[in-house]
Length: 427
Image (cartoon, rainbow, N blue to C red; front, top):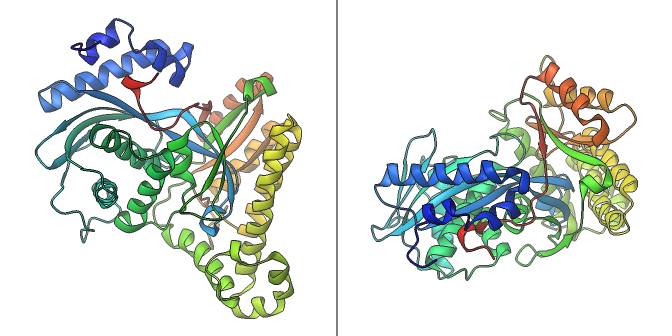
């Protein structure tokens, strides 16, 4: 293989094994074409050949809604929708990223501190990942990358986490010899999003994208989360996983998202603790009268959801381990009801005419009838819902969803076995 360009290896089938592992045998031809496209895009943009291909998947949350930022448990999975990049190192001290269809982004590495006015931008994520990796000892250098993505923005599949993991995986592979583990790459991505981008996210999205497969994650110690791979063959269980776009935009909902951790912090302050994981459940329930007065009922209800959904993750893991998919689906339904009634992240406060997520849930429940399960997905308030649909009714379900919510609103996803990866070096 030495001396061969990536374009030659791709054309001769040298990457087929890696592509089949990531995208399945049925997706091999499309994956070849996609790789050829990013290699051509790279050479056309930067005037040279790429030296590596990288990929990072979107993620889906299977259990534990908003539990991660309370140091709780989650169940999540990487999916077959990803960001694919052709990349090469340079000695310019500059990172240049061209995402197909978007303006070129340039980040100079001589300034690796938060830049005023750069919050909520892609450049902030790049700068944040590079800054943290340099702090940890990575000899970060310049690079060029050309990217394409089939992770829909605002889909609840976490395109931002996939992007952070992709940048971290590229820097790790090109400059650090793969020194950072998948969990460390996830933590680096979270740091970039918290400190540079300005979003107080938990660690679930990045971990699921970076590790891949189905993972049960315990964030009791966020510096060293316990990550355990869980076996799940949806097709063998007779189900497909659908992510449904409600049509609602996350824009202008920052206050709604921020209110959840802030109200939970208020509950924790009563006990002199930082997160609910540090507050024994029996102490919380014993203090309900005082908590209602000090924090308000919504904060208390949200805390109840966290305790219950944290326990539900353990139930889901147990059900999957013993092959009881019906019990798993029962937990999915319970989680969805808890998110709606207690966490209250389905309808933004005061919204009457536009209750997109609630409507999408009602539509999905009607189409599922008594089979399968659905729930709010991810942060809530806008974006997507999740549905487990029996294979025999999948086409009817998808047609019914898209007849009302629009073509392309129902994404049928599969679970990807690996996370962030240098594709051309996969074994």
